[in-house]
Image (cartoon, rainbow, N blue to C red; front, side):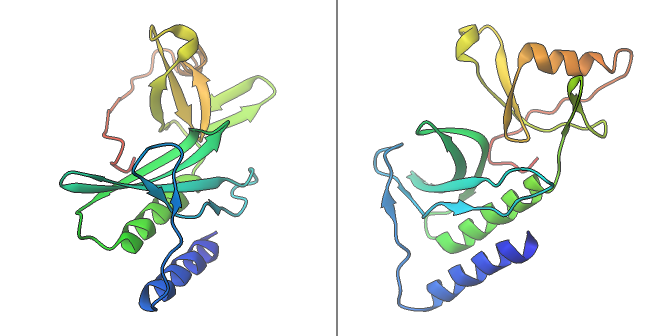
Length: 176
């Protein structure tokens, strides 16, 4: 996996050093934004390959580089974000996002057995999202790129009844 990511970064740095321009595609997801060509990862930890789409947006005094998976034309699964300055090199922001993807895909927080999903290694990281099925009453949790209902996540936590836990909420651009 590391070799695969390094090959992409080397190609990007080679393109940046030449007069070639990176091909941008007009995004259907957000008006006035652009994305790099999608990138498919190698299979990691005996799981499926992931295809990440990239989008850059200028938001006033900052540039946001995002990487995300798509399902039915909408972002889902793994999502990553890096924030930079408007005059930052986009290739360096892309490199940061790719490195973050590599680190995130190298760790599995949920293990699957005959009884269903369980928290692996006493540690779980993920993202909180809106659950359309619950009309905002409870969230949905995205862990290892897959959706878990709040009820299912609670069942996984119940396995540790009597234990202590620490919860930390971070901005979506912070690395977890």
